[in-house]
Length: 129
Length: 417
Image (cartoon, rainbow over all chains, first blue to last red; front, side):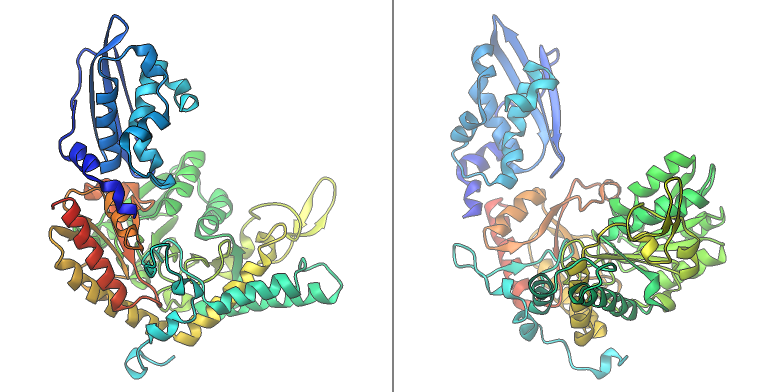
């Protein structure tokens, strides 16, 4: 069923987002929108010794985009930047563990798109996904 | 035309049998509850048959072939134009230009009438509740010509502020363009009164009829509008069929839109002269079968009777407003009085994102629209990112509304509103 995407893990991260907020100063900061539903996600990073020492996300949007961004921050915190650059959409979708329809893919991947755009620079973000 | 009090109500249950898609179920065996007709309607068998018959038995290009198939296709295409003209009360089929959709119709006016008659400092009056398709073409024209735009404000319940319209009309705009019915709020604007006031100020008037022509009786001679734009696909007809109505003298004085075949009288290497209207605005091979399908849709709606269609939707909307009021923390936007609104009902449920609401409804095979409805300025005015919108048409029943309400309760349970 379509509403099985609203499994407890998604609702939990939506209601109790991890790493919610902003970093000032941040080594990397980027935000983007999903024009389909107007979701906005911003991700701030601090990098120490090429590792993500601190990560925060902020924004507004649907449960799928915000929960996905929350889960993403948990995935990347403490990990080497090089590893994070290699994260694929499949890595994130696997972590989400929910069936994402094509229509909701942009919601689910907004956080990853923002993260990659932040650490790679805007031009490459879509290519990398 | 008989009045609504003298005719039997529309039998939506019988109407449903004419729409093959409504007999489909999803992979979970749930019946389709289609509540997104404001985006695009479903098509009755009569329209599908008209389309099928054209492509199977007399598919040919029109207005040129000296053979039977082409002559038949041409005759049916022009017959569809007659049907459309009668449907909206046009004085002549020549006043009806076939286009792809409402958007193309409005762009046609902006790029032909607009580019010729709008100059630096001229004013075009629009409204805050306009669809992007009646905002962006005028923004493009205003930027090119150095013209000004002003927008009629809305009341908190989503009606046009007529005093503000009067204030703007004192600046003697060249054109007033507005939606007859708001796609996002369902507001039915008093089109005849707006036209009367605009004409008194010396302005021409374009009505965006995308949400009115499919749902209520629209007569261009009663409204006295100068232009009326509408889409076929929202009124039971195929995608890619639409109409620009324009008063004949205006259309004749306008330069062409696109150049090419069919729209010419005589072509030399260096210059050309134009065909009479409406051919002048129909460059290239049109969507022939789709226009014929629009003719079939208009016949279908005429047989139902547009007064009955309006009455059916008004009653269903009243029922829906009652049912939705019972859903916890649900807010409906637009006029509360079903007499002042259409069957497009926009709402939010607590602070649940409309996309999530729509996704949960989809889990029950209830199809609604969620988003900004191509009305970003209106959403900003209302302080919203988006809404969920259910919209009704001839085939919707109280049972559909009940399924909507039940699915909404499920959404409120999941999100613990």
